[in-house]
Structure formats: structure tokens, C-alpha cells
Length: 62
Image 1 (cartoon, rainbow, N blue to C red):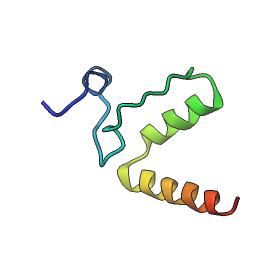
Image 2 (tube, rainbow, N blue to C red; image 1 turned 90 degrees about the horizontal axis):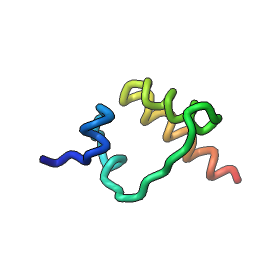
Image 3 (cartoon, rainbow, N blue to C red; image 1 turned 30 degrees about the vertical axis):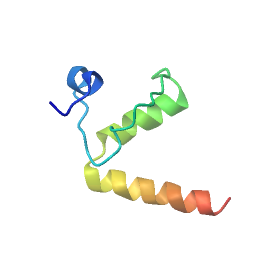
């Protein structure tokens, strides 16, 4: 099976390369970062790509 235990237990979908890295972050859902990640997970794939594009553009302005 090409699925991590996290993906199997959480129902997270493997899309692109975002789930292949072995690094893990842990943070509380009731933080700003937690809300950002939760909202990102609710977006469809095209919306996620669009948001990632916005974030890349913001990084270039720094």
C-alpha cells in the first residue's frame, strides 16, 4: 500500500507530493495555524493550488 498510517487513520488524501515527506508538524487546531490548515483541507484541489500560488507570490514580495 502506498499510504502512510496518518493518511489511513485521518482520511487525508494523497494529492501530488504534499504527503510524501517524512517531516511532521504538530500544532493545536485552535491556533491561527490550525485554522489555516483546517480551512485549506476543506478547499477543493483547484482552490488549494490557487492558495499555494498566492502564498508563493507573497513570499516573493518579502
